[in-house]
Length: 80
Image (cartoon, rainbow, N blue to C red; front, side):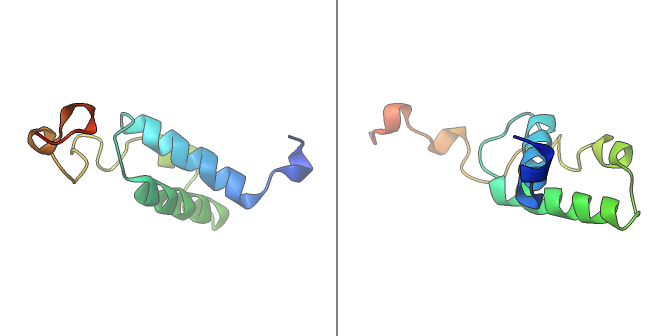
């Protein structure tokens, strides 16, 4: 993809993916990652934070993703 074909959504997509990877690739949270990516990019555009500041440390890397825990999951998608 050439630089001229690279749009704002592509930047957000790449940043959201990087956030997801930094957080250990948790299940779920895509909307949160997308929103955070948009916020980071907007802050960079406004000069509030440089790229190195946003990559430093994820906010919730140590906290597990909210949602069903292992005790509620089933094997193979079948209910007992």
